[in-house]
Structures are given as C-alpha cells and as structure tokens.
Amino acid sequence: MTAHLNTLNTALQGKGRTDLHMSEEVLAFEGKLTVLARDLRKGTLSHFPSLREFKEAHMMNLEHLHSEVIAIQTSFGKRFSEFREEKTTLSFPVTPVSLDPSLLNMTAFPGVSPPDLEMELADVADKDMWVSKFKRLTADLEDVSSQKAVLAQNHKWRDIENLPKPDKLVFETWNAIPDIYVNIKKYALGVLSIFRSTYVCEQVFSNMNFIKNKHRTRLTDDSLQSCVKMKVTAYSPDVQMLCAEVQEQISH
Image: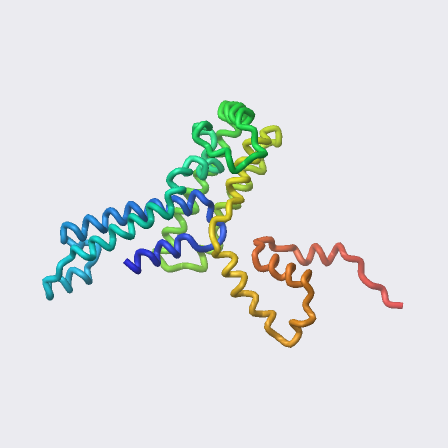
C-alpha cells in the first residue's frame, strides 16, 4: 500500500500539472483502492504477491487488512470529494465546447457573467476553427501523456522533463482565442490559476539554500524576490540577443 501511495504522490508532483490531471489521478486511485479491497476480501492477493507468500506460510487472517484499505478509501472519498463534485469545472480549460455550462461552478469567479459565458460558448461551439483548436489541444495532451508513460517505463526521467508541459499547451490554446470571448477566457484562466499543489513552494525553499553564505546579510528584499522568481519561472532568456541590444561602454 505504501508503494501505491508513493506512486500517486509522484504522479502529483512536478511542474506543469493541471487541476484536471491531478483530480483524475486522485479519482483513479480511489478506483484502484476498490480493486485492492476486493482482492483482499476474496483472498486471491493478486496485487499483493509478498503478502500471498507470507499468508501461505502463516495462514493469517486478512480481515484486518481489508478493513484498513476500506478506511483509506473512505478517507480519500472525504478529503477529495470536491474533485468529484467539480470535475466539470476543472475540465473546462481542456474541453469547454463539450460541457454543459449549467454544471459549472460560477461562485468562485465573480468577474464572469454566466449568461454571457453561455452565449460565448454557444458561439465558439459553432466555429470549426476554435473547435479544431481544442481538439488539437486534447490530441497534444494525449500525446504528451503517452510519451511520458513510455519514458517512465524505461526510467528515462530526464527525458520526461524535456516533454512539453501540459499547462503551457493549455495556456497557448487560450491565448490564441480572441478577446471578444472575454468571459470564457476569464473563466478558463481562473480555473488554471487555482493553487493545486505545494510542490513548487517546497522546491523553491529547497533551492534557496544558496543564500546561506557570508554575503547573505547584503541581500535586499528585492534581490530575494528576484531569486525566488528565477527559481519558479520556466522562462529562458536569450542572453546573446539581450547583450546585443545593450550599448557598449566606451572608455574615456
């Protein structure tokens, strides 16, 4: 069970995860818990090979272990109930044209007009150009997910980091949508801005160890803020171009 939980924890880490991805990982794990609980109840232990060997040697009772898995499943259901309730809302940035707008949670986005959003969605859903854009987005996300699965199976973790980030693909798609669809764009970007994980925060604090040196007392708040931005951004500046734009200092 610890191994299964570690696998879930790893799937939720990293940059570029969308809320939809994280909710699907958690909900899928709840489904896996049902399979594991059934395996323990029947005593087949297909998913617990080490436990199966131990049971055959010691004739142990599995009822307690079955109850523990059920307790984990119940806890997940309570802790992550909002994922299930808000699945339509979290899916909006990826598949807006195929959703029922009446099922969207509008309470968290006061700057969005529900009637105008509904009309904009109806307009977008009838324009092949925008519909094809979201179909292409879905295909790209599926391709990235497929490549990631193959690379993970071969333990090529460094190559996984070089794959396109899902959230970047989603943002690029919405940036291409005209601003006349202001309400659906505000809603999509609002959903994408939901704070989904403490992973990046923890990673930043781990990387800030470089300030523990003899010069740290000379760092200003602005300097520290700039250092934090450098640690969390994916922006890669073109240093050569920036240098070319700077006028050289002529010595006198």
